[in-house]
Amino acid sequence: RTEVMERRLKLLEEKNLFRTVDREKYSMLFDFYDIETAVDTLIKNSAGVYFFQSDPDPDGLQRKYPLVGIYENRIFPSASLAIALKHYGVAFDDVEIIPGKHLRFDLPKPDEHGRTEISIPINAKGQMQVNWAGNWEDPETGETDLIHYDYSVLKRFQKLERRNYILSEFKKIINSSYGGKVSNESYNAAKKYIDASDNESIKIVKGAAKAVRQYGQIEKLILKNPKHPKLKQIPKSVLNELTNNNIIADEFSDTVRAKKPT
Image 1 (cartoon, rainbow, N blue to C red):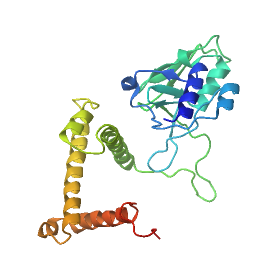
Image 2 (image 1 turned 90 degrees about the vertical axis):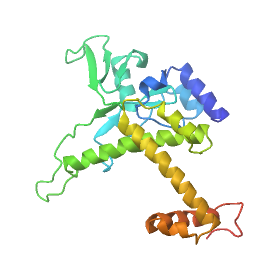
Image 3 (image 1 turned 90 degrees about the horizontal axis):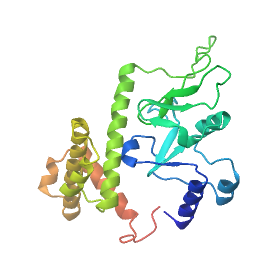
């Protein structure tokens, strides 16, 4: 991080605008990976600095909304949650967050509906389900605001989402600690972040590590001898993609570039 970001994070901490937590306990929350905070003046003088990002489903629809998000070991409330807390006079530190169960807080006094607490069901990523208010289909034209998908299609999307999350975590580990090199050491390091009983996730990481190694060997062979007999055994779709990737990479590499790419 830059010195500016460090300074702004310190300001956010001084104003108690996030909560410091055990990263492993909340690792499945909506992850920012990187953040760009407001300028110092706004942090110092505003009522708060919160996030507005949503997390659409794979089909582009907003069925769920993150109430909290995590950056490294810091949990930030969404703007909508912050507004609700301000309305009820509740501090963010007093909010109970249990991923996969609920987000709840006690009210200082009963509200207009007689409630003494607010409890919102959330998934493992800290998202609440968004109820669609109003008609979703025009009775005259038949046009719809929401596209309806078969349940089995959404389940397949859900599996891909989990797989992509695991692969992104694996990629972060090998890039941050192993210089991007996939080896037994980096593979074993990645496994530590996965529940030992989660065989499917371990299988995904193992498959990714194996594929990267294989593709790396093929790329080296292409660069050394593009007409090598062994390359005939590689499916054309894979071979063409790797060959084209190398051509594009060479064009944009400063070390081999003879002229500006057009």
